[in-house]
Length: 299
Image 1 (cartoon, rainbow, N blue to C red):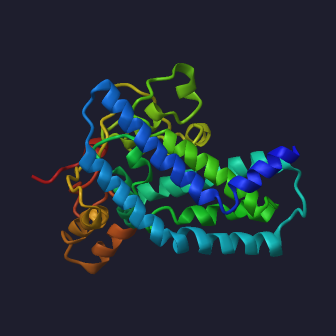
Image 2 (cartoon, rainbow, N blue to C red):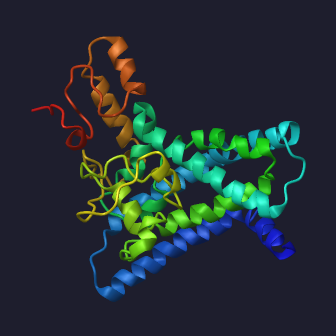
């Protein structure tokens, strides 16, 4: 148990960002070599765009997604925790379950609230599905996750334990964007494997807004959002983006949101686009995710 605690303290300590960076870039390089070995086509421009988006958001997220959430977590843990000392065999599974819960609801709300979808849509804007897309993101995406993680601090999960679990689950989240992993049989019905996560990235009607979890299918099963593979998933937004410049591609979701808002004349309707689901419109004309919701599309 002491060796495990030492390993978690290392993973959740100053090495955390280096570990995730190594997993991300190492996975991209390994996957690229696999494509070369198999002599398969690889969209390098799209991959470089994803890497650029990752670097831009990572630098800005040092404050928004790391320092500020960590400060709040430590504050709740130090001042309000219910249990002074949790045994590691209790703290570790609790940290994992609460992290999965936080990830699930942050991710689900990111798909169902207009403004949050404008932030999160960048992750879905690639028409490819591979390791490079794993960290394709916008700086303001995923910020609710820190709020949903506070129950772990309240219960008494040490910050370094929760960070270590976050690092490990995020490393899994990088792996589950692998393009080279086939279907895995019964494992696909338990874990968020690459094929199951590719479902989440797909734009077919039966796959939109499904498979939100990061590691397991527990909360997707519990809250009725799981979808299994039927036809091969086709990654990308319903309204596709073909911009490989990371400095402009990062605003694709916001641009699509603005385009929908501009169709409304009343300011009340314009503001409603910020909190209504992305398929909603003031006039009943669907301008996002139309195939799923089977409502009128613009001509």
